[in-house]
Image 1 (tube, one colour):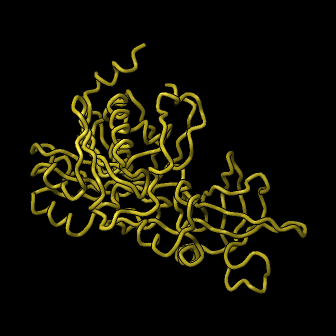
Image 2: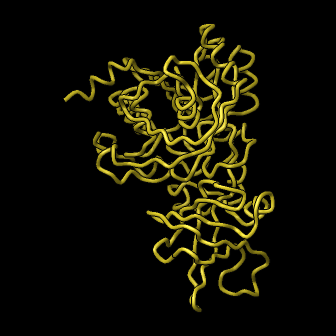
Image 3: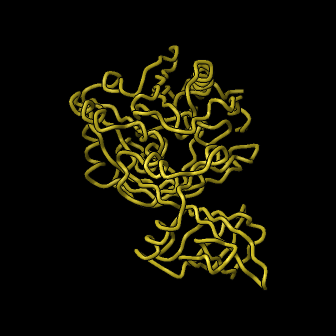
Length: 369
């Protein structure tokens, strides 16, 4: 499938640099195939759902996964930035490094403190490059491991803001709170499940009072979510794996809700990708744990979710491909055109949409030559 099918023009002014305050005051665009988009705000959510529906949220917690430091070799020193994206052991992480071309297997990297003068280094974290892949990806084996490594990353790392925010302003202390969801309890993500950023204690309380449940799953979002699709055809794009888990109690709860006539509403593409990985061909959610690299494009047969709450995504991104698979490309193009024309805010700190799933045959029809 051609990647340029998922391109569109987005004015720079649409990119949100801070979240709405309060969070549930963000705008919410309801998108239903065959109907015009409908404007709401996130706090309207209880009235847009039904008693017996269950929202599925991602309880991953973002770690300060961007490490700044240097590589020193034969008397020359090069500044290095590593963005951790997948843990592979107590002392080992996969990371995207810049400048990747100047790094080699066996290089020693030192993160933290000042890079110009060793006397200014109040603390540091050291690692060895044990593997080098394509596109600046490396595998780092740190000198620390386990909880000691976690503490060092927490102390020395920076919040990994998306490049479309980080390129416009520096990370600050507000981001340590703003870039976490209300549900964030399990550390391991290097990007926030951003649809969850819109929830507040008041909103969750009103959802409960309306008979709408909230179920938690975990998918540790990786930095691969920010990587551009450079291929011309979707078949040539490789997704990076992310670790996730759906426990037995949550699987049973979701299956019971659907059997009773309730709808499954995924909060974020991360929750949706995880549930699609955990749901069998009969539409039964199974207890599941492991890595998933599922790549959802039009033609995918959804088994788990009836609705999807998600933010507004990049042109040509895997996430815009996913929402086009869920609600239809023509529907999403019209919805995004409406959002841009009426001032919706895009990306991680932006506004949200509530998408209804399209019948698969209508999406198939869009791609018949």
